[in-house]
Length: 326
Ligand code: CP
Image (cartoon, rainbow, N blue to C red):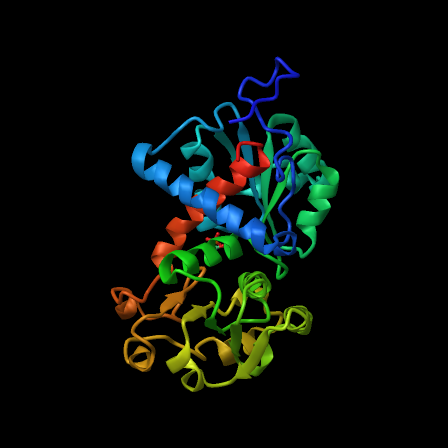
């Protein structure tokens, strides 16, 4: 591991020349195909280390602020686990109602405060663009853990890692995104990332009011990716390699009657999955409500619980990268 010999005050030897040292992770647009392959390689090494030794001291002495303005189970706890597996520690602020945010403190000031005490900040916030605002205020790295209906870049990185690990490739894939494509930030980020790969076909299956936003369609289309909209899953399921299911997000609807009209539009169950390939995977960023029935969970194609574990390795890789240890 390279060390910085110019300062005696860097006992753990960050490599300040590493490509991702000190960088924010705000959008998947920051990642080239080569960057993605690098992240996957580091994540695979992290998996090996966790399997061999569990916890190790790569980030010993480093502190992460986990700042969540919206609920989270997976992202919050996997970043905590990632930091602790790497020997670092975490300041968890999962309930901003117990912080000075309730006294009217701005996001920028909260970020400036936390960076006095920490080395990296993970932020989830309900407003699109909030991670970029935080990054502007901060000198330390900000990692976007979901900004409103905007992006969820670390989810897309773990999603692509999952596809690579489960199917052995990211080229030549027929990927079907199902459900709430309008508000689902995970599918916005995933569609953008998959557009880096060759011969990927994206199929969008959603209710009319929850279609993939036009800006994402245009951006992905500009990369030459084939995109087709379907209203019935049956039309595309038999040729699908990856079925990515999303929850219809009640909390994003202004008019709850719209939510009620579409909430049960698609439900994956063993009967429907009879039409799918034997070698394919079903993914979901989770939490699910009822869009995948529990009696499908034991099917080997159900990859959504394994997907969560890949998230640990992807987030370990990202923390090590921005802190100059990979
Ligand atoms: N996938 C995901 O972001 O889950 P959480 O909302 O539980 O973090």
